[in-house]
Length: 222
Image 1: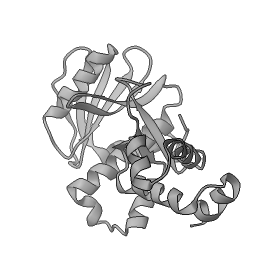
Image 2 (image 1 turned 30 degrees about the horizontal axis):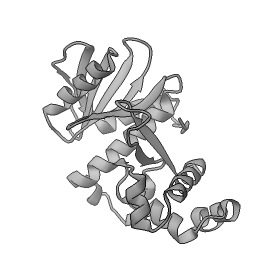
Image 3 (image 1 turned 120 degrees about the vertical axis):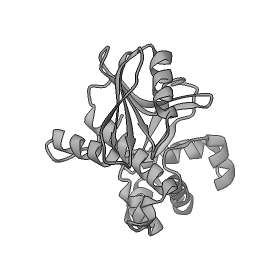
Image 4 (image 1 turned 90 degrees about the vertical axis):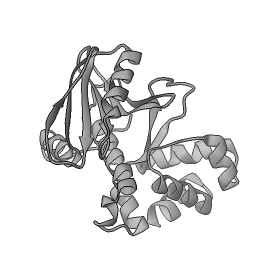
């Protein structure tokens, strides 16, 4: 209420109700494909206003977007929350609720995307890759051979196939990682241009990133 209803509106002169509805829409489906025409129709505001309000939310460090690396200019981006815990608070989700498959997937992917963006300041680009039915949830394009491809899945053998498809399409060698709920580490079969692939717990990966960052993750907008 303070951020959207007072601080932002006082400075930006936005329609409070429309801005709140847009933010809640993102909270309901963080990481969803962002279709300006669809949002404009659903909220009853113009497309330029949708674009402006999204920029306002980004500048307030409430949301961020990732581009589709398969089509960075024309492709639809994904929009995430800078602080995924806001979603749980606003929707009243307890620890048991966020363990449900649909809720866990949204929370984990959002947390991984925010963490990767916040801990890879030297990456050429952080985004996702999607073409047809194949999608790699998050990727950080770095020096040749060091690019990271991450899939957030409770399970699923097609995760490595999607990671490999992204690496091949981008012609960028790197490492693949499948992050799941299971607390185990296992090597996965990988082929070029992947240099290797590993499956591990999403929680363990997040804790490792926190430790590698000195115990504090600081969000760095792209």
